Length: 328
Image (tube, rainbow, N blue to C red; front, side, top):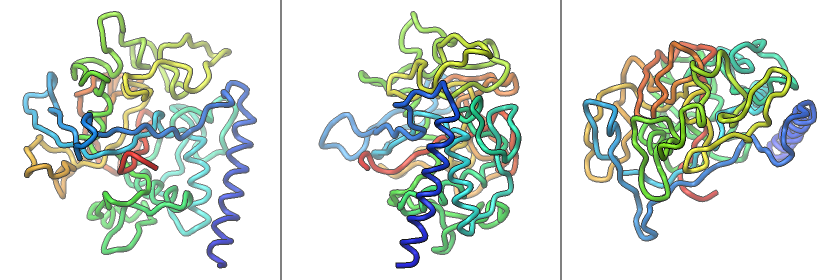
């Protein structure tokens, strides 16, 4: 009972922080929510999985992928949401190597501001993102995904444990997408899949890269999430979620910030039967996808791949939430 009361109290405090941060931002649409999970499932109602070719049109090696139902957030993780989760986490036994910041130029660890709360969180590493997912799952009353020897991982400075951790794909908690899930969501359309050698959302010749992405040709810093394709000025920043989504309703799958995935970076390999593709058990770099505003990560096509040491953090690198299963 004490545990239930403590969790309820923590949720009340975090909800208050969330409401306060929304009120601070005059440009935030009342209908906007930092979490808007979009469901992906097989095209055929009876099927348990969907099939596509990862790396098609962009990589010299490709592989067939079987994709189980999953859900992905329509938005990159905002600093507003990160801050709420981090405060809860630090009050409940979690430790982070990096406190994060608002977009590319925010103050590290500071409370969300009116101008930057809906910028994507940056300056966190892969370990921070994984531990935060566990904390936010716990805060939301869901089962954390990342464990080692059955123990939920709560310390992002313990890189040795996190390098060896496993993901419970049956858990209902929040996690990073696999690379397979990420490219699937970036390319999926109602009629099939878009070309992997285009920005996510470029489904026909009338759509330009600037219509769907903030990248080094039209931005010199991060932007409010979900605003690609809008007119941007410093004094009149567009509301979050007011831009152009891809064919599945996801924003910023190309550009804004590069996004962490679960997998260790390696050449694609065929899987056994319909086995879930989640990369090798060990490696040196974790896969990142989508490109960003920075000229250092200017390749923004659906099939473009990056790899970063999981200890590295940059002001062009963030993440997006995912869950297993197509229903809440």
